[in-house]
Amino acid sequence: MKRVASIDILRALTMVTMVFVNDFAGMGGIPHWMGHAATQEDMLGFSDLVFPAFLFCVGLSIPFAICARYRKGDSALQVLGHICARTLALVVMGLFSMNMRGVEGGLSRPLFTLLVITGYFLVWNVYPRGKDGRYPVWTRILQVLGVALLIGLVIYKDVHGMPFRHGWWGILGLIGWAYFPCALAFVALRGDFRKMWGFWLLTELLCVLNAVQAIPAEWSSRAIILGFYPGGWTHPMICATGMMTTMHLVRCNGQTRIWMKSFLAMAGSMLVLGLLSHRVWIISKNLATPAWAFFCLAIFVAVFGILHLLCDQKGYTRWARVIAPAGTATLTCFMIPSIWNAVQQLLGLHWPAILCYGFPGILKALVFAFLVVGITWVFTKLHLKLRI
Image (cartoon, rainbow, N blue to C red):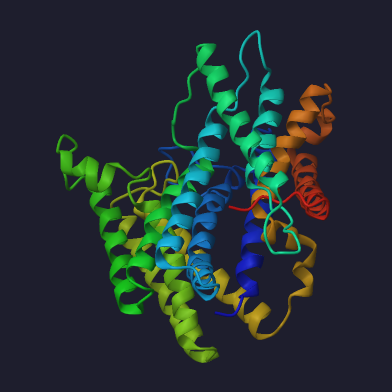
């Protein structure tokens, strides 16, 4: 499979948007539609689009990533091992993000955050290979030190009476749980288009079954089939839709009219499902309702179709170069705001009050988002790039 530029660009746009909305979150004077909707509020806020966009991008990438590993000569068992390792890494990072607090009388929150992220880079940094194609011994030593550091931080919190909790798993943890069944299905079904269609429909069915409470909460089968996954299979369904979007694209084999019709049909179907499900459920990101998922997917499929037409078919990609690091070093970019905030707190620095309200706050958040992309680029040039 040839690399699709629109996937990297959509991922970059999502990452930049995440930094943008997170920076103005909690500010006063911000239009209501730009923020997150309340749990019981029937609304799709602009900020509510970011997390499902990540899930959709993960799904878009799965077929390409797995096929690339097969082309390199990996066996199915090796690919499964990679899927499990990647899921574990995302869940671990999600757990740490849920517990990124200092300990009273001990490590402060910013210092704890910096130590955690240091552990991430020690373990999951893209280290240079030697002339023989192998990693030098020192890289393995650094990875072991990183694992020891992360384990030590867990023990430190346990000793001080602040044990780790999974909570809602954090953004990265939720992405990991959504990625896992989708990637496993692609390997188990060998990427067969018809069988993957069946898996996609199954995720939609499980999503709806969970939402309508078809299986009583006290039944053990509900805990096994539905309750195990955070979001009640809504998140894996969004990820699976991304996979099917990619597979439709590959199946059309570059025939513009065919894939455009296919994308229009998918986006239209998601919109219809959203309108129908909205009669039953509110639009709520926090509750992961089907209505929220279907409306988001209608937007994502349409946006990806437009990006693919402009970037891959017409070749208009120069405009996206400024945000390219956010698409190719996404996990690194994800960590930069946490590093920035931790350093800012340790140094006792604060933004001027005028930049923390209304339009100036929005403008500052936008500038900060591009600043984060620039810092990400610097990190990559210093050979500091997270990859799992």
